[in-house]
Length: 151
Image 1 (spheres, rainbow, N blue to C red):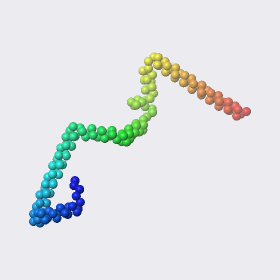
Image 2 (cartoon, rainbow, N blue to C red):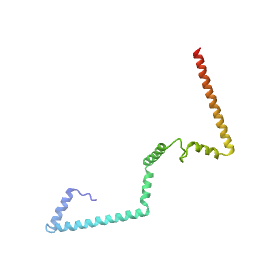
Image 3 (tube, rainbow, N blue to C red):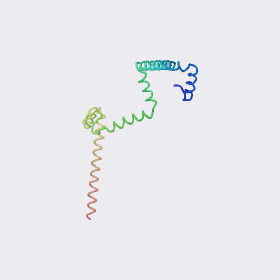
Image 4 (cartoon, rainbow, N blue to C red):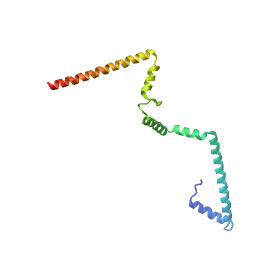
């Protein structure tokens, strides 16, 4: 509160001893102590009343929210932790709502418009045809390699 060092307190004490006298000095210090205690008590009560008023109006939550938003480091880490938690809990065999992936895909195909369903079917058929051709080409290459290895 006050920036008073030990030497200043000693000078104040000597001056008080000379001015007040040794007989009345303990009574003066007692009165000064009561006054100081009463002032601290009033300051504490005022501070509590202001904090209570701030809590009632929601200023504390707004202050915390502003501090959190103003601290990009903390904000970024919170979002990073959220993303990491989501990734750790992610199950590729389930949709976000917890249903199995096969059921979700079937539901999505049923929900498509006829034109889109037809286009999806064409894409699926073309992919299946390419996969079959690739598999056949691999089998032919293996047969060719065996044939060349025997000869």
